[in-house]
View 1: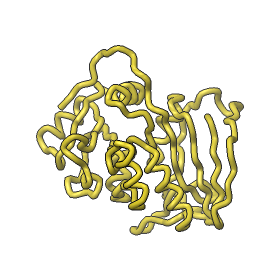
View 2: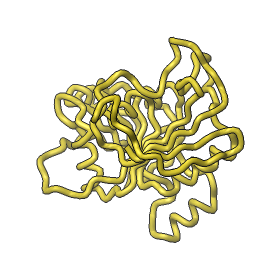
View 3: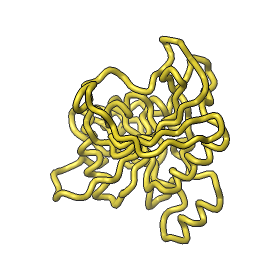
View 4: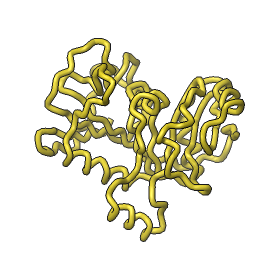
Length: 233
């Protein structure tokens, strides 16, 4: 287990938040199966973003709820990464305050000895993981609380220059509330969820600049029946 220590300043990674939402702002419903808000063409677009990234980060709740693999699916994109001297897959990263992770989750697959999955946690979470370790992973304690700025500093020190954040809502909220996101890619699917018990894209928070701050719209793209908006916070 590592502990993030004081270190010389390094360049933090470029942080890209990627999320698909319903028209009314939900990222899922309450059914056991994950709600597919996007379409095949947009899934391929997201696969291209994953191929661009050096690491992909999700919260522990997303690991438990969605059980994602977080891999680059397209073989051609994987070959391009290898030809460029990059690992076949981006490094996987998760964040957990309590250290509660499923050792059988698909998240742990496709890691390598040189690039095992990274788990950022609190001091208390690290103690829990030390007693009940998941599959081979590198555990990094950020202190008594989760410090996302320190997390980015540590990733930068590891040579991660491009970080793709795929959720869930608490993680997206943390990055945006701390002013740590460089880009937001928001895919809006043509559905309405309308269930107050379902998870939403963002949680209540104090965001930089408050409700009068306007993000910069960089691009609008139509991908079948999905609208993809790119914002610079």
